[in-house]
Length: 395
Ligand code: GLA
Image (cartoon, rainbow, N blue to C red; front, top):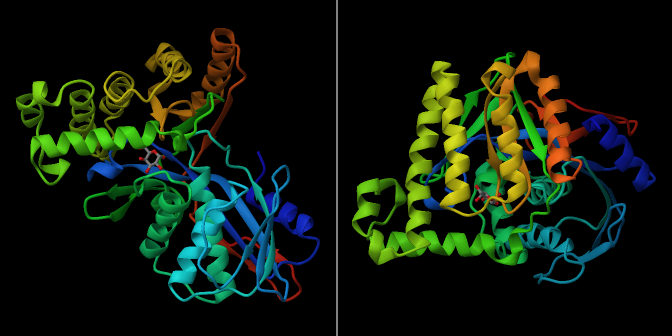
């Protein structure tokens, strides 16, 4: 895996000169609290030590030109309202630039090169990493610093309006607020993040990318969100935080399937996430592990966003079990493919990664991408010295 320093080096090389501004923004993994960020729930993600890095050089025009190896170049006119266009990946860029324009912020023209160590389409939020990296780059080019929450919301709006995914706030918040050794616990009702220490060296988080493609813009995500809205309307409350399991059961038949199943997931997952936060604080890893497995089952059976490969990856972790150092495992992110998250004892992590890789390949015939990550710094500008040299200063 390329470290951020290597990514910065590579982006500068591609740019062919010393950048004026360099921005970095991470992907995320979510420990628990899935598909409830758009239901006023709680989520517990952290910023991965996997980044998208963008290096930019002012070009004296009123255009922004983005290039990335293996992707078609994107040219965007600056200083005017933007709309969706081809190539498709440029819509994340257009969406964020449009958001800045709406705030009266127009950067000078620039050429930008982009490199990434965030696996794409893997449920690890490469799109939020991209949006937040562009927003951070634009802050640097415009000479402003947006309030973090406003910046995350601007990026979320870019995803809604330009990528047409009606996502919640988790990914952009994790990417923006991330800190070293901290979880970004978000109360999605108030929209306030709380930084929760996660520095126990005996705990390791393993991310396993099943390499089964995950595409949220093809309708499955939006449909799940709609089911939850329909359910809440039938239950007759204004927020999921005020809904109990008894409320769900009372209108079970009226809601019908699958809306009633979606409702059961939301209420269960909100309480599991609160319980998980308590278990983590108390060092009760047995409870935490159980809640992770329960979360996976609920996402599989009630929310129907898992897939065979995700289930197998979780099953393998469960088989390794406590004796093998595994605390708990579940799918993470939007689902329909993508990655699992496994919490384990650090001294067994390497062994666990190897077993998971071997078993997964044996059972699915796919080579997974499996790695561990500690909570890392969120979106930031990389400092550039007077001589064009740069230094990474994560505070
Ligand atoms: C995607 C969305 C998030 C969240 C997760 C599921 O990553 O972007 O807002 O809804 O799915 O928890």
